[in-house]
Image (cartoon, rainbow, N blue to C red):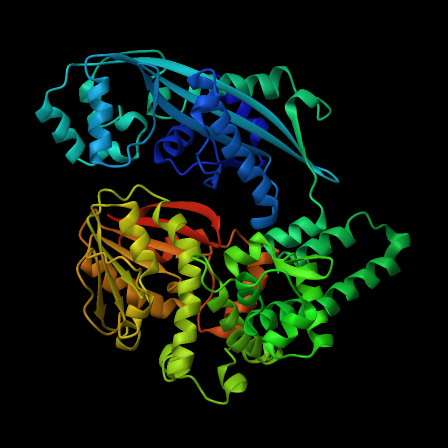
Amino acid sequence: MVLNPVISKLSGKLVVLASASPRRLEILRNAGLRFEVVPSWFKETLDKRLFKSPQEYAVETAKQKALEVARRMPFKHLKTPDIVIGADTIVTVDGLILEKPVDKDDAYRMLSRLSGKEHSVFTGVAIVLCHEKEKIDYQLIDFYEETKVKFADLSEDMLWEYINSGEPMDKAGGYGIQALGGMLVEFVHGDFLNVVGFPLNHFCKQLDLIYNRCPFSSDEESASVELHHNTSEMLKQEFGVLRSWLKKYFRGYSTVKTLGYISHFVFVFITFPTLLQALFTASKMGVFDLLQRKPGLDAAQVAQEIKAAVKGTEGLLGACVSLGLLQSKEKFYKNTDLATRYLWSDSPFSLHGYIQHCNETLWPLFSHLESAVREGTNQHERAFGKKANDLFQDTYYNNQSVKLRFMNAMHSIAKVTGKAVATAFDLSSYKTACDLGGCTGAIAYELTKAHPEMSVTVFDLPEVVEMSEHFHPSHTDNRVSFVAGDFFKDELPKADLYILARILHDWPDEKVHILLKKIGDACTPGCAVLLAETMLDGQTAYSALQGLNMLAQTEGMERTESQYADLLSKHGFGDTRVVRTMNFLDAFLAVKM
């Protein structure tokens, strides 16, 4: 009842849960809240010794999770949330904080310590209210809830039986009270849902205070964290050049400033291709690799190393500085952290391969966008002088160097997005997985890291499988195997979970139905499909641009969450869930009914 007066106040607002926890998601959905899920990227590495009490640690972690999402969404998701909810649950006993166990031995140590004792469960919650003006103001409300839990005396057999069920591995304190872990508990004193992962009653009371009794003022410094977003920082962090300049130059223009508005508009669109080509050219000429090996070179030294003219090199380096990719001090250059992480070719998260693909393949395709619009088809024949009857066989895999470049591009994206996809859902109940069109296996390796009991088969064309060993990690993982085949023509490997990462967007609905029918026929009830795609959130500016993107490149299209759900439902899949990872690819899980 306490939530009912609040629901109407939240109508039309963008509410975001900064957590991928299925327990928190279920609790809030059951309460009637409508929200998006955007898991936080905040690394939970706070030094526990710096906090006077466990609840302070939980609250601070919740605050950092929520603020990270609130800061990121305006740039990464192109919209500002109204409310972001962050939470962190910990278990404390004998003065120690117990979080999620790292392995079975760690789970054993935790549960042995809890056996026969009373312990406390704390959940820290942060509610961030966002107000978008000239800058974004953030109002922060936080609280915590404590619940006392008493464990029975646990025998060794009971401990290991529970640990081997796999349930403890993603839960604070190593147990889930709402499932098998409930058998370990003698009594609970306080909010039961707080032990599950979210103190719903206390949260509802806070919302009631915020919206019905004591509205906050945006001028209250004690509850406000102001974040000043200047254009240069946005460029550095997100490559958001076009969007950043549009926002900067278009804001606040009235009718009397129309000429200035148009002038700035034209300036942006004249300059943007140059900036994009500066990125492509610097990457292709090895500027970022050079400055990673030899930081502090001047323009003449860089020109000598990359075998280019000094005048041209000065212009290129200056453009990279404006993009936030290089730093310049007294005309000596070095990579920024952003360039080191994403543009240095040996970085674990390097996008070097994808940038090469954009330069050599996507840019020529988009030079024929007018023809793509007139004809309604991809432009491979115009761009490369050869008709592509089979997009992959005829375009990417008939030439060794082109194939390797394409696989490098796919590997780049998978390395950057793989962890977010692999950890978006609790997949512990799935022991065998098949990554269809899994290319280099980057996502497969992330899945086995996140889910130790899982084995993954990568199923891709023979031309891809024969090259995949060039991309394998230095350590071998016998839980990942590669099988050659065509998922449209050949029998699919048996699995509990089928993964389709950036596959369905390449194909029109009729081909998607062929593939989904094969998967549906191979699945028994309880099996699932995990999609990793860019989920289009209705008809936004982004979705419109993505539509043109796919038109020029492939036979397929980007789709919305509801479109994917509809496609899958026709082949017996339901109980769909989506996590918007905010890391280029979103995760979509559907279960065979």
